[in-house]
Length: 329
Image (cartoon, rainbow, N blue to C red; front, side):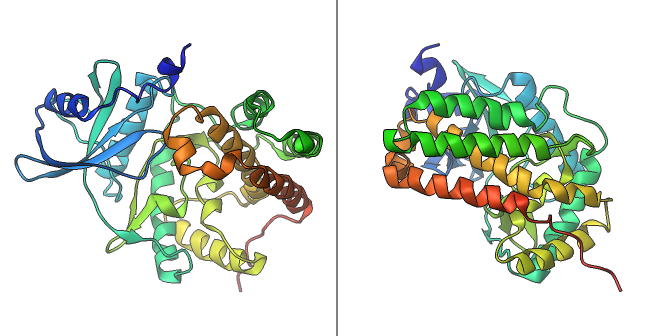
């Protein structure tokens, strides 16, 4: 597979973008403003009828058509339950469009301010809607999208990092020694006695906008997994802060869906999986010119020194008792 096959955004010129949009009957009159997205290419624009859209062009070779369609169908299912999220628009009876070798979807352009993770009222509302999202997600499983697990998040990333050439020679022994210890401990702590369901998959604060309430965006990483995957990235600060945030989220969540408290044991393993996966993701995408521009520190020895420390800290966190729900009086 050539670099062009992997990273064929190079030919995504303004003319090609306009031609792709016009193939759906949508004519851009202004805009094509690039939005903050690296895995895909996302543009905001206004059409000749005054409507504002967001066009999302999917990274070639990442998802199959069937996997993308499952994302779209899940979004439509959630929207039908009046859950606030950015769902793709059906144009000419379909949500996934093709132009030359590109695949894309059109969304309504929605705005909002940043979700405040330390705002208790906002956290409660997010918890309620996550409960509603997961209630829908429990109805069935994705057939084509993967289930979160060690192969995708540890085994493959370990190989990518080993072959990447990014880790400075003087850090290789310490980095891979600690990484292998982390992988071994994560493999030991990872268990399968959780109920798999369809989840958002990447529910960090940046994927929640705030208007009169939360607006969830970007189901690009949706997959099967444990419910806690959509909760732990909303926790921050000291252990006490996280306990209070967790209690707030789950009390509201429980109004709409049941939560298995045994999944709390997965929080630190999931954090470890994300740490390893993120490093490998940057290494895999480095041939895409957008990545060196956006993440210049990735090729700096200081970054890898910091990652050695981050791995050590995660090893220590895995030895701590897992977060527990506060007792109810």
